[in-house]
Picture 1 (tube, one colour):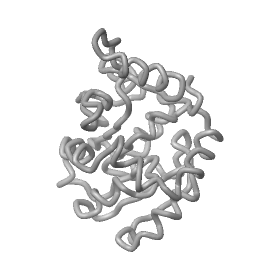
Picture 2 (picture 1 turned 45 degrees about the horizontal axis):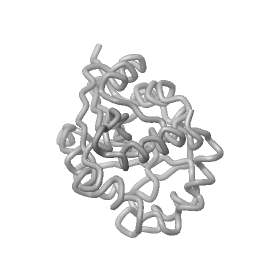
Picture 3 (picture 1 turned 180 degrees about the horizontal axis):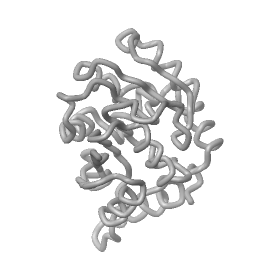
Picture 4 (picture 1 turned 30 degrees about the vertical axis):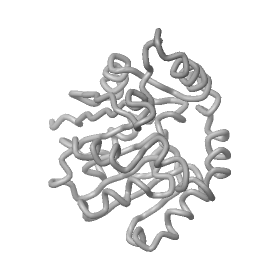
Length: 214
């Protein structure tokens, strides 16, 4: 388990990051174009209510809000949520502090669940994905962006160092591991796209899956 796959460590980490988060993290790891390309993989036209798990300062919600009628954001860090709630463009969003492992929502509340980067910090990824499955309506979708567990590179030692550091800090998965992970959590038809920012074009893995209709 990575150092930051710990509930308290994650919360303290993002509490510290909150004041400068928007200026650094989204553009470095999750640029708007990358997020939008991932969001384009899900059917937002038929979606009324979306939950962003690990919403941070609301960057992803800001991209979602024009496409859906109701957006909800959940995060461990109160300072992150306060930063999000202070944004005038997000005044209609319902933010709540909570844990991905125990979502404070009724069964089948949302048409879609999204989570950008949060899975890196989950101590129990299957448990959190099961919770996301529980609160998603039948036929609904999930979109998760995390770090790709890249193969060892024989020509890029810098990437190998980056991945070595990431392994000590975060939860990561590749396509095969992702398929097993999402199926174990109850989702169907998981598909993966490897992408990333300009400086790391294979850094990110974007996974979509669906909750089967009974």
